[in-house]
Image 1: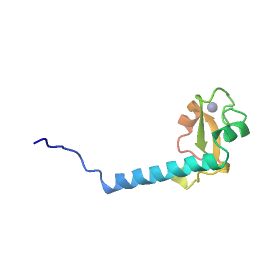
Image 2: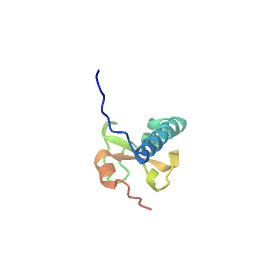
Image 3: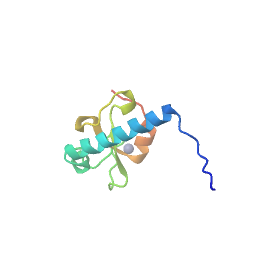
Image 4: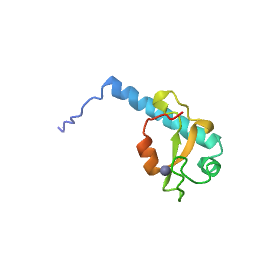
Length: 96
Ligand SMILES: [Zn+2]
């Protein structure tokens, strides 16, 4: 008989995963509901709102202006275009 060993995720981790998935779904639907990612990119002129660099969409990411961890919502007004580098540096910082 084959025994599977696995570590049971703690309740905390499970909740984290659930809220992550929940936010992900909201994020996707907010983006779709607001006309899709193209609309956010177009509003921001296909450029990073921090450093101003522009590029193709592989290089750009959609960022939460106010991070979800600080109560930010996945709405059109709270989403912005950032380049991958600025998004990484920004992390959970909330400039405002
Ligand atoms: Zn940038």
